[in-house]
Length: 161
Image 1 (cartoon, rainbow, N blue to C red):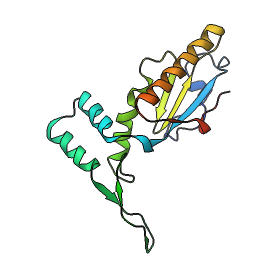
Image 2: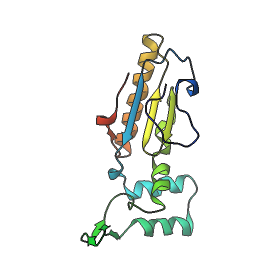
Image 3: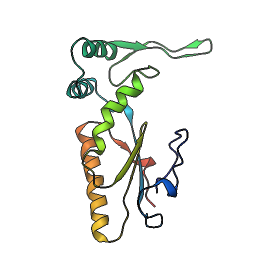
Image 4: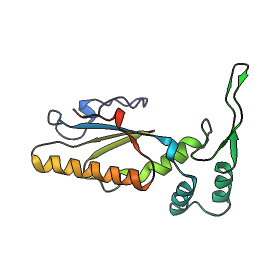
């Protein structure tokens, strides 16, 4: 079973839509990702690996590097701050660039996974100790990906049932 809501329209994330036996899911994990540690160069490398190159890659690089932001709320305005790391918040490109950055985090996992925005649902039907070991190995792979790509999971929002 998938824990939580994806807030995706027309998708019913309940027991009947989860693959596997409806009654045998006794481990469910939710891991949300902190976006703030996303590094620009790592994103540009991933974009290049999926075929984004040339002028488009240079344009995205110029979009990400050397930008500043100001927050406005009503008639109040913050001081201008240079964005040194990550994707500019509130940008149209931001969500798609973030998804490109995290898309490979579930590659090679031996379990069910579902992703939406910055949420990852990770689960496996547990019949025996070997299934538990497989699930734990998958968690270790996710943790390794997290360290390799400098994007830690928000463990305060992770849980199991």
